[in-house]
Length: 231
Image (tube, rainbow, N blue to C red; front, side, top):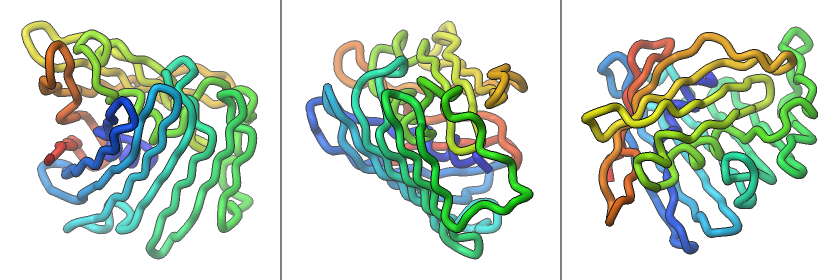
């Protein structure tokens, strides 16, 4: 489920100089449109904030029919973004809320409401998750407009409660306006990466030499995932 949520949010972008943005997306798995997503926020030279909402359309059993996330932070750290507070809320039958607080680029407190069951995976050692970002911040870091070379070379780790993943840009695909990106799971205690999965970021031009991500394609547990920006 974490990879679905990460993938479905992956097209969130931003604007510089405190210009607000609002983006709309369609999400499909195995050729079937299953969700739409709306994202709004603001990115400046020193701070950022974003909110995301995803609603199921059609095959509602695949993902939560009511999912929201929000984050705020500063423009520092390895990825260029350092979260300060992240909130994730899921509705439906399994309604829940997750709050993560950060200090100096490291998650220092995680609160899950309702409390996690005793048989669920323990929250890992938080001090080992230094210089990671939540999945919504990871989306901003990956899809912030830039030159094609900048977008296609971005790499960082994302951590949300018990899941950690690594995103590694592989550069521009020759002869195209697209990038290859490797998504890997990372063990939260040993920090060893495993199970590499390839994703493609399709770019579209802005002004001058600037580009933004217009579509993401890659594997998911429900078949090939395609996330397309619609505005």
